[in-house]
Amino acid sequence: MIDIPILLFVVYLLGMLFVLCISIVNWIRREYEIVSVLGIVLSLLLPLMTFLFSVYRLEGTNEIVYIWNQLRDANGWAIFIVIGHLFLFVWMIIGIQVKELYQWIKGLISQIQNKWKQRNNHSQKEVREK
Picture 1 (tube, rainbow, N blue to C red):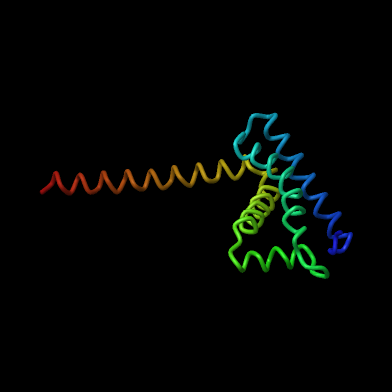
Picture 2 (picture 1 turned 90 degrees about the vertical axis):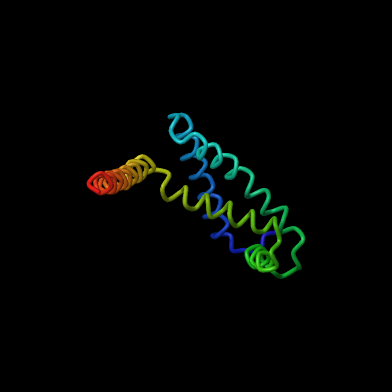
């Protein structure tokens, strides 16, 4: 039934469990609720979807190779599965440090806004002088 090595399968399931825990904790804290709920839903549905999608593979090919081949053929489900796993991977990496990332992005946006305001003020002064 499973053609990938058992160690890889265990690491995959532990990763899904880790993402599920991160998402639940952030959802309970009411921080980044949309991303947390998306993480909860995807961490529960993606293993099932991946299993059901890989049922149609040929005998002897593992799940990863099958999904990769279907992705190259632009299969919609394969694209959704890969994008979902990429989202969960990124969420697993930054999920714990989301607050710091949010503060950094907020500071970057405020710097851009300040530069934009300075640019507009400078251009308005030039128009007034003329």
